Image (cartoon, rainbow, N blue to C red; front, side):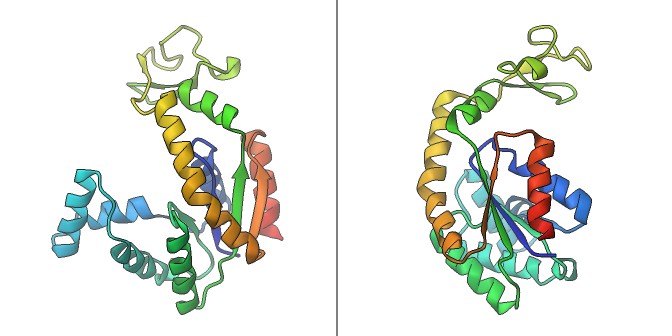
Length: 217
């Protein structure tokens, strides 16, 4: 089993595919966000720093993130493979991640790029609606995922709402940030011959079949 890194623009379905891989292969899904949230609960100097930094909306220092990731990858459940999520976010972090892997005698594994066009992503984000009671997710831009009654949840009758960051301006900012920060990472791993690409415009099931084939090979 090879280690896996997913690279994808916002709303490309990266989290969904990671869950499917975990379900089939039972490897840990290592999210930097989850690690930081757990550390922020600890009653020590680092925990306090992380908690205050997250609360302020700022980014945790890279050096601390590197140390936390290295400590997590040292655990026994990572020996047979893992999915890394939310890291690296830029080229500098990619170089550091490579160093951490080399130090632990791990391979980069498969870096899977989910390609999807901007227009589709825009429709997914701007059209997304969430039930405030049962948290079911709908999309008013797609007939098969629209609620039967406008703004009302099919499951529980709860009111549907749109997240404050699910707007065109926010999406364009996040998408541009992805292009600026992530494109160099894609080139970095393409040069290492570990980058695999899948079409993210397909169904969830078909995308997973393609990813599964990559993992098996």
